Image (cartoon, rainbow, N blue to C red; front, top):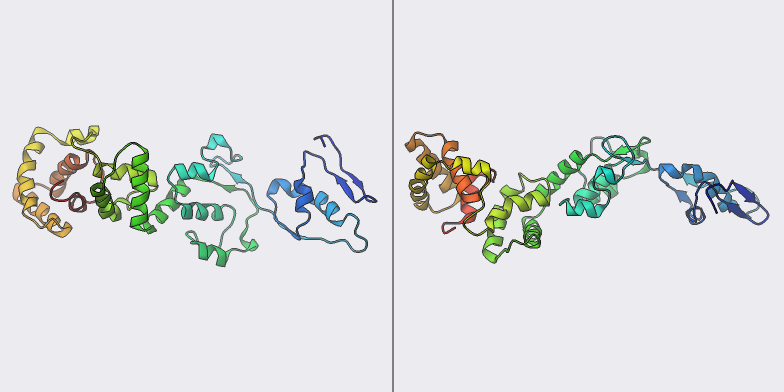
Length: 294
C-alpha cells in the first residue's frame, strides 16, 4: 500500500484498503472494543470501523472512542530531538527518578483538580478519561526538574546513596566504604538542594575526593591570606566539640562572635576549604558528615 492509495472498501470480501500512509495498526486496533489513539490517528477511525464491521450482518458495532493529546515541546512545536530528551532513557541519564518520570508522563494531557504530585497508588485511584485534555500538552523541562526535586526529597536516603555512589564510580571517582558512609550521613542535606541525581552526585563528590581538592574559582577567592590564617584557630575550637551538628554549630557561632565577625564570614572560607566549592549543605552538617579526622 502506498501513501497515494485511496480509501477502497470491498464489502463483499470484508476488506479495507487503507491509504494516507496507514499500516497494520488499523487491522490490529480494530479488534479492540475501546480505542484511545493519539490525536494523529483520529482520521483512521473510519477505517477501523470498516474493518471491525466487515462481513458482519445486521447492526454495526461502534466501539467507544477517545483520543490522547499530542506532546509538544516548550516552544509549542511537536516534540522532537531538537527539544533535547525525547526518550525515557534520556531522562534516566539526566538523573530523573522513575517515580518522577511517571508523574511527569501522567500529567501530560491529564489532570485532576489541583493534584500535581501523585504516587502510583494515587495515579491508579484517580485516573479516568474525563481528566484527559483536548489540547496538546507541553513537556516543559523546568516542570520536569521541579517534579524531580520533589520526588528526590521524598526518596529513601539509602537508595539515593547507592545511586550516587554508582554514578560517581561510573564517572571514574573511586568511592570506598568511608566515603559512602559520609554520603549517606549528609544525604538529608544534599537532597534538599538537588533536582536530579546528576545534581546530587556533583554535590556529593567532594566527600569521596582525595586531598588536595580541586578548587572552584569562587572557592579560591574566599581563601585569602587572612582567611587561611583564621582557619587553624577555628579548627581548634571545632576539635574541642563532640563533633555532632548541634555542637559544631554552637562552636562556629561562638568563634565568630569572639572574632568579631558574622557567621558567614567564618563559615564560607571553611566551606571552601572543606569542599572546594561554595555550595554545600549547612556547614555544621557537612563537618559532622566528614568527621573529626577528615
